[in-house]
Amino acid sequence: MSTPGTTTPDAALRRVIYVSHAVADPAQPMEAVIGSILDAARRNNARTGVTGALLYSQRRFAQVLEGPPAAVERIFETIQCDLRHDHVTVLEVSSPATRAFGDWSMAFAGDIKAAPGDIHPAAPSERVLAILQQAIRNTEAATA
Amino acid sequence: MTHAAPTAAAPSVATDDLDAPSRTDSLTGLLQRDALLDALSRRCVTGPGGGTPFALLALDLDRFKAVNDTLGHPVGDALLRAVGRRIRGAIRGGDLAGRIGGDEFAILLPQLTAEAEATALAARLVELLARPFLLDGHSVVTGCSVGIAVFPTDAQEADALLRCADLALYQAKAEGRGDQRRFQPVLRARAEERRRMEADLRAAIGLGQFELHYQPHVDLGTGALAGFEALLRWRHPQRGLVPPGEFVPLAEEIGLIVPIGEWVLRTACREAAGWPDASLGVSVNVSAPQLARRDLAAQVRAALAASGLAPHRLELEVTETALLHDASTALATCEELRALGVRISLDDFGTGYSSLTQLRSFPLDRVKIDRSFVSDVATRAESAAIVRAVAGLGASLGLRTTAEGVETAAQLDQLVANGCTDAQGFLFSRPVPAAEVLALIARSKRQDAAAQGRISA
Ligand SMILES: Cc1cc2nc3c(=O)[nH]c(=O)nc-3n(C[C@H](O)[C@H](O)[C@H](O)COP(=O)(O)O)c2cc1C
Image (cartoon, rainbow over all chains, first blue to last red; front, side):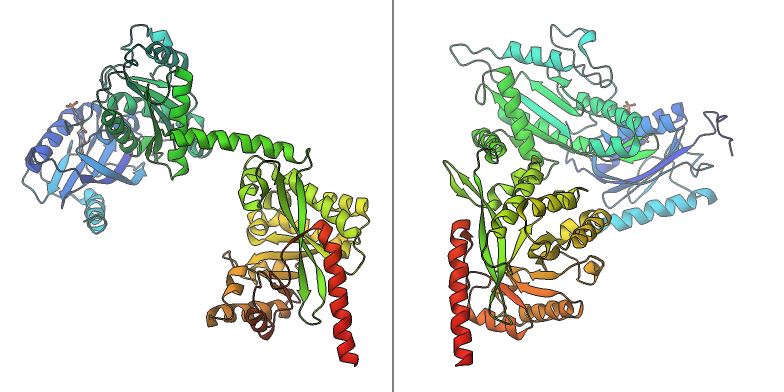
């Protein structure tokens, strides 16, 4: 716990969780799309101290991003402008005490074969992972 | 290209020859208003071939004020900054984007080969700006509306073209926001018509163009005339008699409903005071904005004093929306009015969502059952049941119940059978000009006398 006024950049954590719909592009198989997203994530996130997890299932994304607030907001904004997905709905914006996915620049799990780095749920991440999975299940029915 | 839209390294907006950095808006990085308007004017040149076509988009955030009001100006500014970034990311090289007001933007598409390009950009902007923003730990969803105008088809001058784009933008907003509209000449005609109507309406009190018509209501217990409802009409020199539905919404929008309401109050009191029968009441509609003002009771007192009308002869008709909009002010006002000796009735009952029990805390004297229930009271059991329930509850709360819009004898029979105490409608009389009220009163007196004669005979 940090005392007010003495927060160091490292002490302040921001977490955002959202779901979105993948936009289909016949020219781009989903494997390739996800591969390129994960490449970008692993390239960019580590540099700014952002970690997280991405879930893909039934043409839905669910993602959690964690890190210093400014860095999370910057990466979130970049992702918002990405036309490979739409219908973005934010489910949670919070300031957790610790990270749920501290070990991965961007862990991935999905019903699709993608790059290595598949999630091996560790204890702290289970709750967030459950939120992501539940979120995808909840939105599946919405727009089939 | 369906790949990621460029963001941080977006094409600069400063692609125009004269756009020095000093002419960009420091918050959004887009062109300042003047710079954009200059660029616009420079392109508004019509030659023998009519000039090079280009498109102008006017864009306005749908919920900016709410963000500013609830999350504060720093977050509002952060939103504008992020919107600027998304706009820069969405436009093509050569397009010019500027911030022309608080949360208003304009985008110039100089190289327009087909109108569809403007529509496509508008669609992209609507989509991108509807996505969430993460600002200072808040997820903010704002959305935008876009209006499109094309040079030289829609207008040949910069100002006029911007007005066209704005009119299309208003249309997009009026039709539900979060979408785009292309300018159409009918929008200009409609705006012009509205402007004329507004000017005429502002002058109408001064020019003495308003008048009151009166519709009688009848006590179903005795069959006798009980009073009149005063109804506002506008006698326009060209349009003729304009019904309230065509000018009251506009009057509300431009803040004229309060002075017009005061005129109605004073006029109704004065005219009623001149009726030969001092037992006849007059009811006057009071709008929500009037009821929300603290000085309504003072206005009523002044109108009574000026006319000499006995307070118990005046009845004010209010709607449940007006009562519940700011319930505590409305309650205080109603109690003041009651203390003056004035009566209060609840108008159009049944059209809102509240129940009589909910409205019981207000000091009411009467409920008026909306015409929609009356019209099929004789043909639908459900409507008859609603009328019966309202009349029954009204009676137990000590209220009279008036049925509005009674047109047939069959309806009247049902209304009597289901417990209504009063009725009003074409079956008795249409609303008549003030000058015909005296004749109506005289006629009803003769009928009463005849009825009395029959009874005593
Ligand atoms: C669902 C989804 C999740 C993404 N997650 C990330 C991410 O965590 N980090 C990241 O840098 N880019 C992410 N991207 C990709 C970005 O939108 C963008 O394409 C990328 O950051 C560009 O990186 P570059 O400039 O290094 O090429 C994601 C895209 C999608 C559609």
